[in-house]
Structures are given as C-alpha cells and as structure tokens.
Image (cartoon, rainbow, N blue to C red; front, top):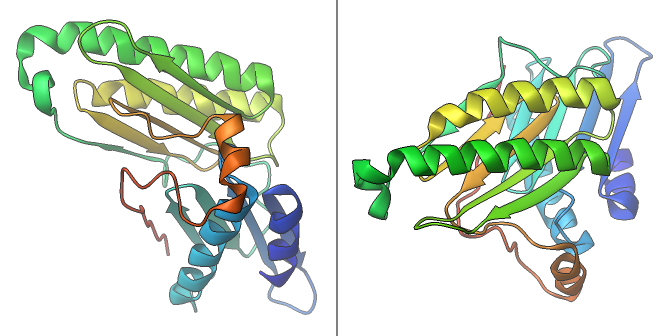
Length: 219
C-alpha cells in the first residue's frame, strides 16, 4: 500500500507486488479520471483504511465512490470479467420516472448514454463521461477501465458491464462493479469535467457527494 500510495500521488493509480517470500501479495488501486489529484488521494486513503478489515482473507476488492482497490495472492492485472464477482446495483424509479408512461423513453436514453460512454472510453483510452439532456429526464453516464488492461480487455469489460447496466432502467441510477471496470448512470450529474477536476485540486472533499460511498468486500 505504501508503494501504491506514492504512485497514486503521481498519476492517480498504481500497482505493486511482493512475490518473495511466500505468500505472494499483488495489489492495485485506481481513481476515476474525473477526480482531482487531491480527491484521488483522499479516496485512496479511505480505501487503505478499510482494506485491512478484510485480513486475513487472501483476497479483497473495495469500490468507493471515486476509486477502486484490490489485493490478491496472484497477479490479476489483466483480468477484466469474472462472473463470480461482477455485480450490478440498481436503484428504484424515482420522481417523474414513477410514471410508467416515461419508462420506455428513459430506457432508450439510458441505452444511448451507455453505448456512447463505452465508445468514448475506448476511444479515449480508459475513461469517459457523457450527458443525455434531452427529454423530460436527463441521463448521465461514466465509464472507467483500470489502466492495467489492454484495449481488448477494457472493451470486453465495458460491453459486458453496459449490457447488464441497461437492465437497471427505469431505475434512477445504476452501477456496474466489474473486475476490470466501473460504469454508472444516473438522472443527476455526479461527475466532474476535466476542468472541474483541475479546479478541485485546491479544495477538500469529493464532488461525488450526491451519493454515499459504496463499499464492497469480497472474501
């Protein structure tokens, strides 16, 4: 964790391993690319405090609202999909979405922003956000692959995550927590733009505060 913290401070993600003596320990941490450097450090610090609670388990994964941490007893850097652990969390319909007459329109909008954010993330490298503002209810989406993945691995993860995430509509928001990526949509804008992320560098606190932290432990 100390080695990864130094990397996170420089580039908002990192990985490290201790392979001798046995047992091996491999770890990875990554912030979403819309976070400022300061917010990334704060998110990583939260995860680093929580992660020891998983010991003495040989494996653990933690999703926070802005970053991801994982350790295991083997090298997992190119894992993108794992049906045993990949998961989607969906909320209930809220506000005007309770009206069933809007369900179909919103489902189409969610499908569109998921498709667009997947394409943009793959075009950009690993990360993208999109906004779908037309109609009665807007839809916003964020996609992030871990930087350890190659293009094919990132694509496989985002396509699978997006396919499952679409089923959350007409829920007001949904999150796909996958082995190699994270994807989320919401009726509220929950992410920073790149310029906002830079501006946040002199401020304390997460701009993702519209939703609580999400902790997930796997033993």
